[in-house]
Amino acid sequence: MKKAPAVVRQVAGTKAAEKRAGAKKAVAKKAGAGKAPARTVAVKPAKAESPTALVRRARRINRELAEVFPYAHPELDFENSFQLVVATVLSAQTTDLRVNQTTPALFAKYPTPEDLAVANPEEVEEILRPTGFFRAKTKSVIGLSKALVEQFGGEVPGRLEDLVKLPGVGRKTAFVVLGNAFGRPGITVDTHFQRLVRRWQWTAETDPDKIEAAIGALFPKSDWTDLSHHVIWHGRRICHARKPACGACPIAPLCPAYGEGETDPEKAQKLLKYEKGGFPGQRLNPPQSYLDAGGKAAPPLGAG
Image (cartoon, rainbow, N blue to C red; front, side, top):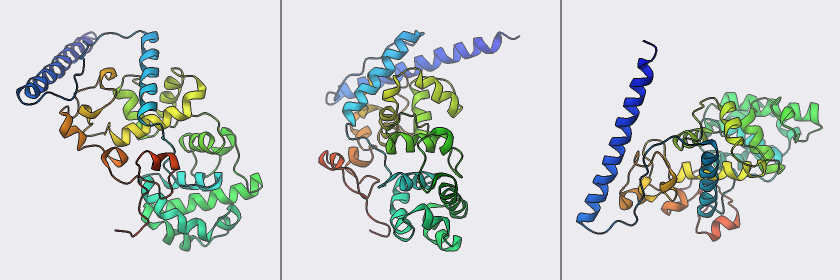
């Protein structure tokens, strides 16, 4: 009785693999009936992958993404570590774009931890209203500002164990701050990162801390911060949750989930977002490297 579920899973997995392979053949046949497809994706049969092979494939994917997104960066506007930690806390349950459109007014009125620590909560709530959950976020940013003033002399600490003690700051936020404000490597396990590493079969873990540990073991520590940017950028632009643009994916030959999304190159191209689709990005003040690559700055709050 206990062996039945494993057999069922094996049969289901085999049928799923056959279905994906059949779908890819159908796409190739359809493309051949008209014009030639933009490229051919080699479909490899599913097989067990050794730990060494997994490391090699994972690192190759990261290298490929580094070429696709050489300008990848944190998509929150910030000028210092205080602004970054506050912006990252505010980014929960909303887009980086909405945060970037909101924080200019916040930091103009409360530029330092000392200012925000003594702010009127109702006034802060009005500023943060567009980000959603504005009452809870107001409590967090005022609370972390007070903690910075009272415990760290008004400075953002550069240690993980100190950062996670701040109100509203967990490991994900802490690693964003450490990696991008202090240059200390960290893996940012957000929803995009979780989705893609499982889709690529780098890990089957679902707990963020276990995902962090599993992926960290595949890469040198020095790669962690840039790896996070590459994976998150790919998830936001190409490998979407509901309909990944498989036909426009630069790492399709390395992806075991190829075929879950749109495989037709022309249709897949229309699914691309931000600079890959010719649209503005999320930062109002993006790095020059992003603009040089054809990226566009996001509009301010209230702009058309």
